[in-house]
Image 1 (cartoon, rainbow, N blue to C red):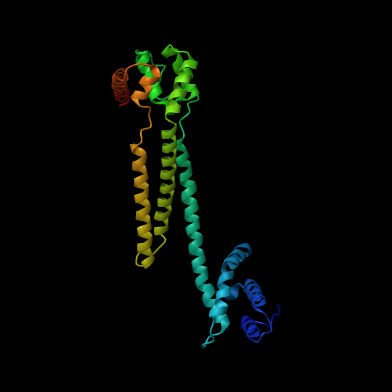
Image 2: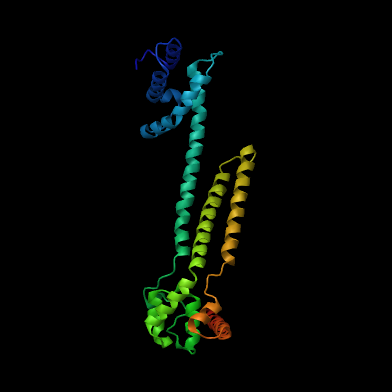
Length: 287
């Protein structure tokens, strides 16, 4: 572009028919890129090109909307770019907030949804099957194992087998039957967990975006309503997840073991009572 041609000359050439619309837009684009200080574009070169690419559709509309009423096209474009820079920074900040919220919370979700793995004896939890005082009733232990099938790993099976008096293959078969009986429930739990995760992320994003908007503006009330709606959806999805049982039913366990449901009921009750007492003793010993 020749140095003696400015942006006002370009719009005049377009109106005179010397250049077409596409050529005008391209020349304006290059002019702004080559004269960043004139339009207060305090970007690095690559970021400036990103901004101008985002600005391009606005340049297209500005050409149609410009009317020569006492101010030059250059002044008109300067005002357009001034407000466009503010909008661009706000959008970039919102995008950064969204990304930060997602990545800082994704790790915590993975931790919450993955089962703990204990690689060695030092990492075992207080309730450990190596404590023989808790394995007086083998049937009771087997029933509790089946009831908690979702949290049973191969490593845990290896640890508990010596105290059950049942072959490992038999235990694995019983667990497989229980899992098959609960396939639909597992699918529902998975869908609800994903829903909770999704709504939790959206709520955090809405909460963060709310902090970017002045409280006295009209946009603040709209953003606040979106935040409140996101929180309501999160609470609803959590409620739905909480009411879905994540353990095998006593009736299912009775059917798999071929024993009366009442036997399972009493064993579960007694096992929970003993476990509660054990943890109370552990807690007192640590005080």
